[in-house]
Length: 331
Image (cartoon, rainbow, N blue to C red; front, side, top):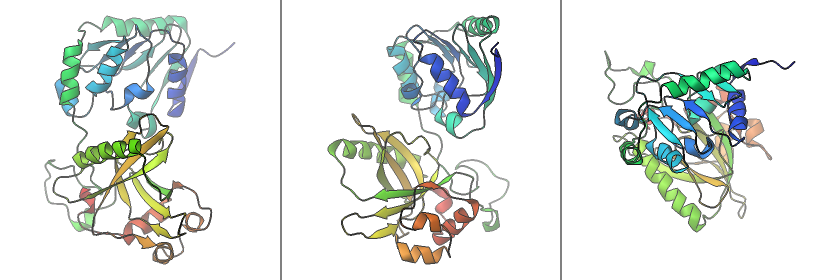
């Protein structure tokens, strides 16, 4: 007899939820935070109910995307507000998930999440009824439009472990306190090319999004690159180091490490434009020059045939020392 209860974590959570959503049957979902872009990969069937924090404060804080709630509403999904909501429940009639995951890329790809997936009919029905019993304040399209207009991206991303801008501190951080934050550092193999018209439009939007996320006191340089398919492993806030190859000339350079500040899909194509922020004073290095600067590290990335991957802790430390600046933490 198949188990009716299972502890699921991380990728397994969304595998179960996505499989249940594909059934095409209405769901009852309670989730306090809905991140930007959630409607593109979480697609409840028409007739579903979603209970979340439908308030302007959550939108302004970047916790709930009114744009995505509005997209769900237009697909025939009913939206309800509960400001005290903290529970995360996804009920599908004959199955349900109860756990820690919000409807956001951060929750899906970066945080350690866990919960219980059940196919026990009684518990699944109890989860369904729990969501419905709290759906008392339905939100209309007009207010969802207000939320979409009020939405502001999360606060600027410091590159080192200092408080976010505007956060009060007891004392001014000292240089010795400034250790690089724990964002992932991706090593990317990129190739020089020319943008199509659709890519140009996506790049313009990504650059504008990225500029809004960069601390206003820093004159950061926003650059973009195209990524084939969905950049599921690249998230806003991550760091990237790009090895750029010109296929025509054969010239290879290593671009300064940068912060991912925006991602935009190219309309009509299975491709995304990724915007990054770095300091304009930082210059690219020839491949051989960079290889000497990191003193023998990253050999399996820098050699012929090296592939994109995550940097190890020692590689990360070496890379961040190649380009240093006291304001890099504010990008």
